[in-house]
Length: 171
Image (cartoon, rainbow, N blue to C red):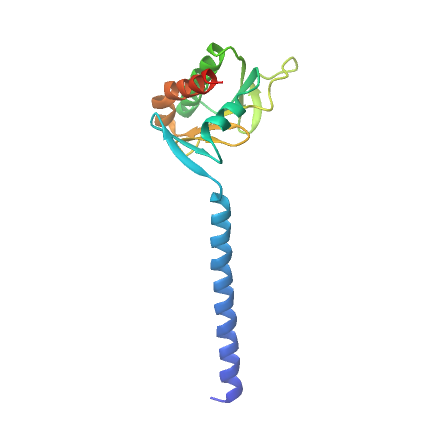
């Protein structure tokens, strides 16, 4: 094999190796940045994901006198919708008992539909979002996301309501 072909093969190998190393470094940085600053704790068996202080962040999201709860639903008669409704009802009840004015609306396939019409102004800006996902957790950011599967929703509705009541009773 000529020197030129050996050099060409070596350059190609180096290029491929550099691309692979770059891809691995990029992927690692991406995943680290996604999890950076997130903390996790368990309260009454509920996994809570937050950035700083879980209790303060929960209280901050629920600080307004008027709280809007968004139910993220799927189109059709799906049992997951019932689980979301149970969780949202328990959360709304707990907030109401804590002297909050509570509005609940449903988003079906991305469109605010249930309890939303021309006379309703509380179909955006929800402080609490209840959604089906594989998280089985309460995530706190600018809002509170209660995210999980059907079993999680049905088994933990009272715990989430109690968590909200506890956070609000301390403020």
